[in-house]
Image 1 (spheres, rainbow, N blue to C red):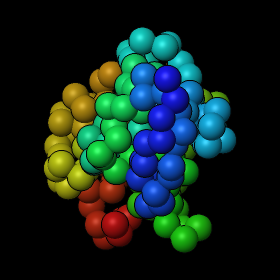
Image 2: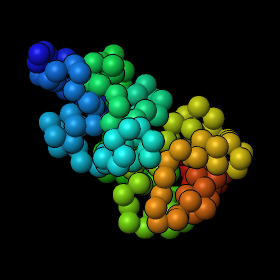
Image 3: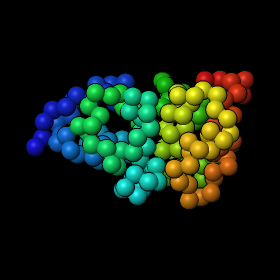
Image 4: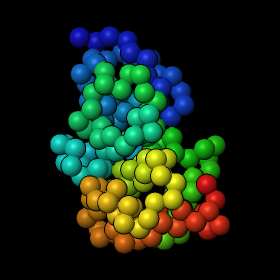
Length: 158
């Protein structure tokens, strides 16, 4: 059954005429044309579909629209501000922390959630937080380097 749900996505209120059981991933990609959030495994394991809900990293391929109706959603399209990349995005570029780019949006949003919860994580805390986001290209060390560099504000001011 389709009902109107108001969602806050990337700083905007979006009235969603959709089934509350619709997966958030398909709502973002299909209804809102926000295709930066990727479909990977479909079971919440790979992290390609990661978005933020209330500052927490969630897997949109296993989360329904109804589950996030009262939380601020940030997708990769909302990470930059006013056309300016945020510190993490700049660090990923500077460290070559992407190759094919498929996992990048999920990596960035998972890292953003980590830094929101802990602005100065250790290398081991970064590794543990990123452990469940998969990169088939093997850019994990560069991804960790990029995230770690953001913890040093002189290098990448937040």
